[in-house]
Length: 378
Image 1: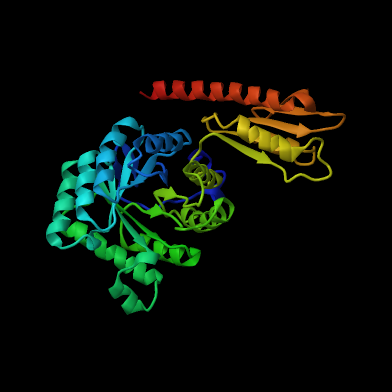
Image 2: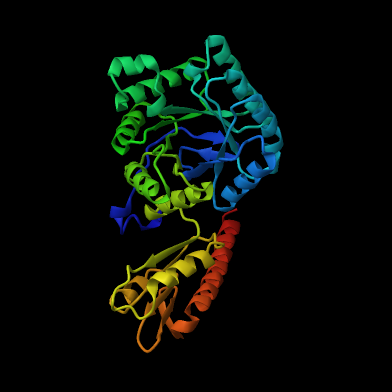
């Protein structure tokens, strides 16, 4: 997309310059791609179920997955889980410093922990030493619902300033211990509060920022809130890794995260379907066609575009901008477009199977071109 900025400057997003850290083998921050995260909801001690859920999230595109480690049994389970999964694991630690040490030793790639909440300076140093010894990064996770008592007393209630002060206090602890492999989040369920906190935080630190609107809600309402809150921040160049927090299957969080990034041109994975809202002009059932294609094309990971437009008013114009397109016509048939060019007529009855076939063929071509370009660059 960057190659188009000279002719489409209105699509330019200038990302905030942050330090780059590593979460396992995944870079976060700097000029690295914005990563998508989710969190398991299985009992961590149920090793089989947790591995299955992590792999399902990874198959959906998750770059990083967080796992709760509330007790010693979960720490032991983590040792069995980490070697069996294909993505880095973030261990979610709250108040017990020993869980942080155990998680680092168990192979966690990152600890989600607030260093100011785990005890005295000696305990903090022990956790930092474990993280350093095991190449484990740290995420400072500030949440409006669990701010420190002294900050609530100072500000009277959770506020953006209170959240940022909490975050900067935790950052100072790590920096005073010469530990810099950290990222930070400032989450709230209130979109306005979260956005204001993140904007201020982005000005005060060069640490990579983990974006999220916490406790956002169910699949539909939570996605809307997350898209508004995180979307506005991402558009402003803020954010290096994201989680869409939904009361839904973790796989849905991953899908929605990619949809948000795809809408801003910040990340591309799978088929981006451009479809009309359906009206009386449609030459076929647009709604059911798109529903069917979304399911049939879930296996495509190649970044590409597909336009499904019900009539010839906007259809040809949209098809010129997509890898594959279908525009409804009359008499039970429409026009197929390939690589932006009109190709052939197609019966509506054969539409779905044929479009899936065309998308798969186009994906193979794009994959081959990408592989060839990568080889040439080596």
